[in-house]
Image (cartoon, rainbow, N blue to C red; front, side, top):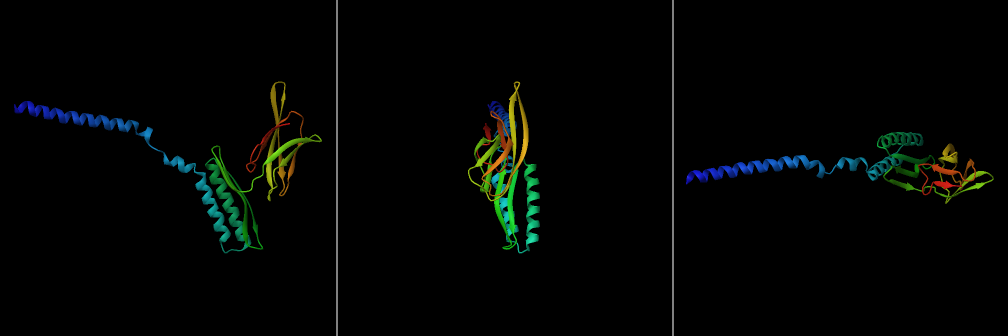
Length: 205
């Protein structure tokens, strides 16, 4: 009688070890499917970067330095953060001026933009309409902004079944309510490209 009992006990222990080993192996195989990659969240968290850059703004603005030093500090912040965001696939727009009379940094626009999302503080221009006037394309803004910005206009025309495009660069001055993109024809397809522009940027004339 003792022998069969001891044999059954040994078989139970062996079975338990085998089953535990199998479960452990399965957990190792499938753990990659259930693990959350928090590093990806951190790398793409534009709100985090936005907060950090805002802190940099504040630190330079509140520093007890003369105007020239404050201007230099903002230039260094702008250059460093632009490179950092570029490495992460994020476009950065920092538009500001330094008021030497008040020894203060005036932040006009801070914008982070990627394929996934965009976050900003300040006023952004948007195009209400794009029309032809005397053979030129005339863009009308919903409201003027207190800073100048650049726009690239891709003017495309279908010819012989293919699309032929040319690109023009336009500088829009501070306070402007309209800007011209130059000569266009009826039926042109126009794409306005600028980080700071909000809203619709594609038009057919």
